[in-house]
Length: 197
Image (cartoon, rainbow, N blue to C red; front, side, top):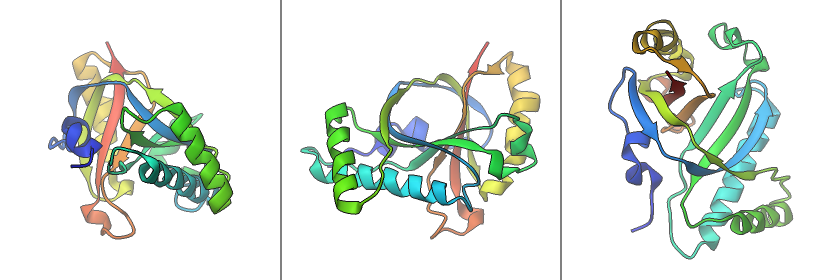
C-alpha cells in the first residue's frame, strides 16, 4: 500500500474538530515555493502551484517506494496583517507546500526540478525545506475560503488569550478539497497557527 501523509498523520490532515484545539506538530519535509499576490488572480500563483505539482509528481514517478502526492498547503502572511481581515489579497504573501515522505532527499528533489525544467519548460523555483511548527492551534473549516474569517477572529480574539498563548509562526492552511471540483460550501480546509505561551 502506498504511503499517504493524510492517513499516516491523521491528526494533522484529517482533524474532526471544527473549533480550535491544541496539537503538537512534528517536523516535516516539504516542497516549497514562494510568492506574493492574490491567489485567485495572480498569474505568478498559478505558475508556482503548477511548478510545485510538476516537481511532486516527477518525484512520485521516480521514487522506488510508492506514495500518494500530499494535498496543497500554504503559509500566509502580509506586512500589515489587517490585509487578511479586509481581504486585500493583492498584498498577501505566501509559501505553497506539498509534504514529502521521509525517504525523499535533497538529491531527489534537485533531479526532479531539473527534469521539470527540461521536459515541461517550467522554471521550477521549488526548494526542499523542513517546517517544524511544534505547538499549534488547529481547526477544520468547512466552507468557502472567504468564510474563514469568523473562525480566525475567534482564534485571535478569544481562544489564544483564553489559553495564555500568542501566535508565533505563519498562518498555515491545508486544502483537503479541489476547488475546481468541489462546491465552495463543501470545501474542507485545516487551519493551523503555531503558538507559544
